[in-house]
Amino acid sequence: MSIFSKHFPLGLGTSRFPILGPDDTEGIEQSIELVCKALDSGISYVDVGYNYSAGMAPFVLKEAFRQASRPFSVTAKVMHGQDRTADDARRRVELYLKTMGLEKAEYFTCWTIWNYGIFEDIMKKGGIYEGALQMKEEGLIDHICCSLHAVPEDILKIIESKAFEGITISYSILNAVNMRPVLDAAHANDIGVIVMNPLGGGVIAQNEDYFSFVCRDEEESTVHAALRFVKAHPAVDIVLGGVKSEEELKDSLSVFAKPDPELPKERLKRVMSSIAELKGFCTGCKYCEGCPEGIPTAAIMQARNALLFEPVAAYNRTEPEELLHHIQMFRPLLHDEGWIPETAENPCLQCGKCEKQCTQKLNIIDAVADTYRRAQQTYFTKQAHKERLRELLYEKGYTKVGLYPNGGFSNLIIRLYEEFFGEPEFEWLQFNSDPKMWGQMADERLVHSPEEIPQLKPDLVLICTYKYDQDILDSLRPYEEYGVKLEKLHRAEEMPWVF
Ligand code: SF4
Ligand code: SF4
Image (cartoon, rainbow, N blue to C red):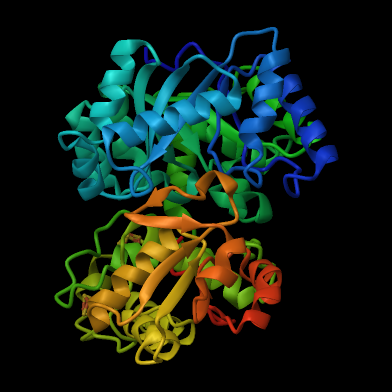
């Protein structure tokens, strides 16, 4: 039994509501109706982030919760980096609750722990975890949980710390071999498990034929079978499904409303042995590790599984295919493994050690060479990032440089610039379109409204985000008449610097 055992096995993800923006009243109304239907159907766990569905998800939930006639549980999330101290965590939770019109949240989530170092920071005296403990004592929250994007080794250490009663992890056929020890450990420790990305971020739904081995028989759809596979591990309590229409909601509900037609234990065993037989597919078993040049062969090979499938749209990009493949391939390497090569020069000695150990007999040497070639093509190296910052900012005679918006990208730019070139001669300014951020301190710097641009007069405003960079550039065009230069950080062929 875990803290999530009482919930319906399908949880409601709220990041894909059909909302275009704060003024899209039709989309907001539809989304409220969708949540009401989900709650009426028995879904009882709701996952929400403040920025989900164009930042409108919390507002949608407020109205849906007001109308709800059945019990529901929601989580308040605090992200390390954006918040650091116990006081920050409290402020964030209070803001969540106020936005959703709630007195308390059953669950508190330390959101997106990328590695063990971040976990240690969260646990420091006066840090986010201490804030969570205080809130739990006061009854503002009931359970302390986390969502993890770390490598399995780090997740295992975090589970063993017993700091969290529940975890949210990415788990699907794509990483099942790798994540098995994590699930086994959570189960052994009665830690509740919520699964995000059960369809591998859309890859499985888009490549149904390739993954049809997951189906029990011809009657079963690949998507349904993949969802049942995820739930088949006894550690998994809830599978999160982000829905954008009533049709999608009904379809997901149909999977979990009845017991699995195949015994979960048997499904787990059958699918796991089929994964090992997939041609050209890296299972993530890691037998190839131990490269004398420090090349993360297993991580690279697993990330390259993306090249076997049709690419899915990502970060507001729908083409070209090659860029989408690169995003899917390099994302787990940077986001989950923290790996980005120093330069595009391939250090492989072709000693063959990795290939000799590979259980799938994969051509690792060629794959590593191809990965470095692709890294060069897409500027996915530290050297390429340094050159880009030199080109944009170094010795340009600027006195003020604006970063838009503040957050993960702007923090990285400041850190990298100072690492590469030392203290800048110019002052950093931060801008954000979200009125809630204006006048707030974020990473010790004040956040300004874009309307302050004429008065603050930055020489350059650098659009750091990836997803909406063109939209932001267009919205800032009127400020060019004040002599402000506008630039996008990312080049056309490039991937996000932060995933
Ligand atoms: S062949 Fe290359 S990648 Fe493989 S272990 Fe040797 S140096 Fe590392
Ligand atoms: S040994 Fe082969 S299958 Fe296993 S992680 Fe390495 S490349 Fe992948």
